[in-house]
Image (cartoon, rainbow, N blue to C red; front, top):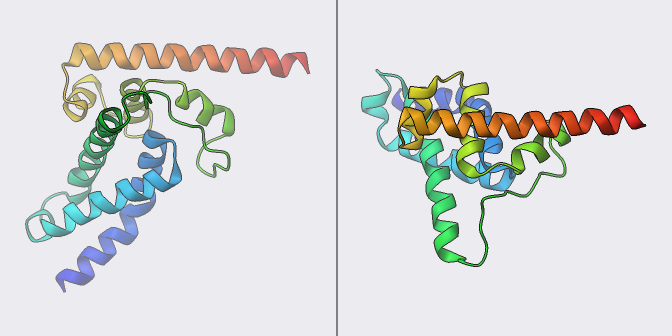
Length: 162
């Protein structure tokens, strides 16, 4: 019975988690890794989480795993700064220009924008997931959205010129 409940949760939540992970990481392979690790952590705690909100545990876990992944990459490859993720060439979740615009953001800006737009979190919710103050989360979101608007305006200029 417990296994069936967990499998139903995994089947229902994987698409949403995958979309969030893909938007955060910018890479479908890293997204799957993040989702799998988050689901493993939910599975280990399933008996306790099943009666609570397992999705509410999985999403913040996924965001923290991505932050840890970015920090680890910085330590392991000091000359390579993963502040800019590579855009995804074949992207079924996001329009290519939007994936490129997200790829131009710092990891914190990207996470703030994704959490605001996809998860509808306020500044306090974003701050809690990023491990920073609400003011810092507000700054990441503001700068990220400003850069996204710049990219959208540049795209409109290119489209108008065609």
